[in-house]
Each structure stands twice: as structure tokens, then as C-alpha cells.
Length: 281
Image (cartoon, rainbow, N blue to C red; front, side, top):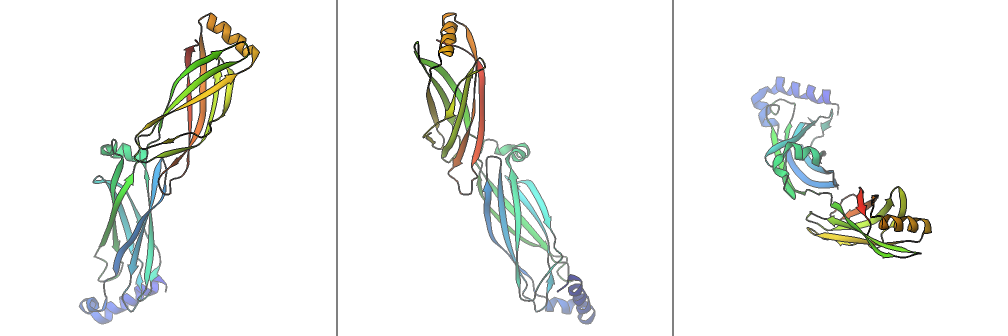
């Protein structure tokens, strides 16, 4: 039924019955929170979906309510919004209203300083509904729901060093070591692991790491890369550099794919890049 027709019916009821009689006729809508669910979570944000059910127990349709909501985190009003629809709720019918709520971690850390050291947060979604009809229009129907959300932190990737293992006339073997620190409350599995290592602007090696480790919650794992060179020209240059005790410039870069032991967590691709000078020994 069209909204303007519903409002006309209510106006007629007011005129014919009067306000006091109308109070006896109109029954309160029933409002309840059906669920709150995480629809997606990443290292940058979390998306929630709150589902509210509005039931009309009356023998006539009523207008869809004006809905406003607030998201509170650590007693701080972090976000808010409104929902308006030019619709009606049929007699003795119910409707389901979905309220999407998004939490961007950068905005959260800037706004709520108290979460900086937290591994997870408590949140509450407060929802208010007003029905634009006589008798109900000055009342607010309130519901709320809360829960706990993890605060994922991107693992810290560090370059631990470069070490020559074998220096021969036809082959050089060397070791690169990365360290990955997982400060989260959940395990992280490394999927694809790409690397590219260059010295003095010359590419020494590139490739992927096979069978990288699982980094358990709150722990650190080292990833050693044993590599070799058999380019005679590069070997000659390296021998001269070592003999002259000269520093070289290096660039170690790539990307890793992270899978997190959390439902609905989207796979993340994290780039890394380290550069500097070292002395080959």
C-alpha cells in the first residue's frame, strides 16, 4: 500500500476516533535484533551486518520507521547513520532491515586512542526507530546488540641479513634471512612468497619460496633463503669487491600472500622492500 494512503487512513482515524480512542486501537510495533554478523574482515577494516526485525501487529498497515543507529567502541561514538524508506509494513506482517556497519582501523586508531594497544575491541550498535504516525510519532523504540571484534595487525617483516656461505670459481652460495613477527591472537599462513634480490643494480636471483612456515599467534618465524650464483662475470666482480673490502648496495623486495585463521578474512597481499649497503665477506 502506498505511504500517502496509509497516512490518509491514520488521519481519518484521528478525526473519527480522537487521540485517546486511537491509543486503544494502535498496538505497538515489535522491534528485535535478529543477528549481527561479520561479512568481511581484513588488515584494513571490518564490515558488520546488523539485522533488525520490525513486526506490525495491527490490522492495518503502518509506515516504515525512521531508523538511526550509532556504533560505540570503548564508550566512544565512532560512527552513526540513518535509514529511511518510502514504504509500509503490511497488516500483521514483519520486515527485515539490514544495517551495514563498517570499521576502518586507521580511523578507529585516530579517533579512539584507547584501542592502540588492544588485540580486540568490544562494540555496541544502538538502534532507534520512530514511526511517523499519530500516537507513535513521539516515541522511540530502542534496541541494541554488541560483540567483540579482533583487531588484525599486519605482520612485521624484517630483513635479518645476508651471508656468503661458499665462494668458488664457478659458484657462489649465499643465505638471505627474513623474519616475520605475528603480533596477533591468531595464526597466519603464508601462501605465495615472491622475492627479488639485486646487488649494485644487478639481479642476483628471483623466485618463490616453497613451503613457507605457519606463524603461530604471538610468535616470530625466520625464513632462510639459500641461493646460488653461477654467472662467471658476477662471480669475478664479487671476488674483486671482497678483495677490495668495498661496500655494495642491495635491494631485497617482493610480496607475500597471507591467509589468516579467522572466518571471512580476505586473503592479503603484503609487499616488502629492503635496501641498504653491506660489506661482502
